[in-house]
Length: 121
Image 1 (cartoon, one colour):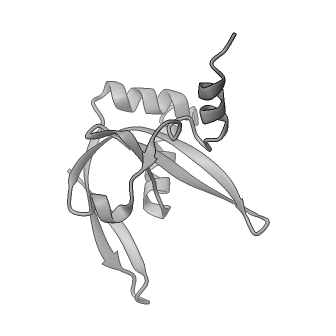
Image 2 (image 1 turned 135 degrees about the vertical axis):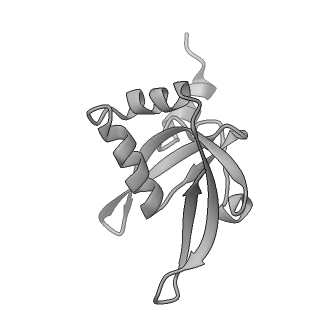
């Protein structure tokens, strides 16, 4: 017989990377050097429109996950493309390579909206 609690946790997560982990907020990672070691994509329906966003894990925060925006989505899509769109294979290859070090920065767009960008270290 399976572990019903673990089945419930994984079923209630939009990505298996989220299961059993707490979400880290952008304010908690701005200015820190972190290593992205795994990624996935999650999709939600918001007012009838599907929205897909990246879910990433940091080596330095193994019990937490981060939901990325447009820039991380672009990066994770490029990584997946290296493995012919196989997200799981690309994420595993990223981890095998030791991940990619980044530093997040809070900035503003030309119109004054908040934007989180990152430097690849």
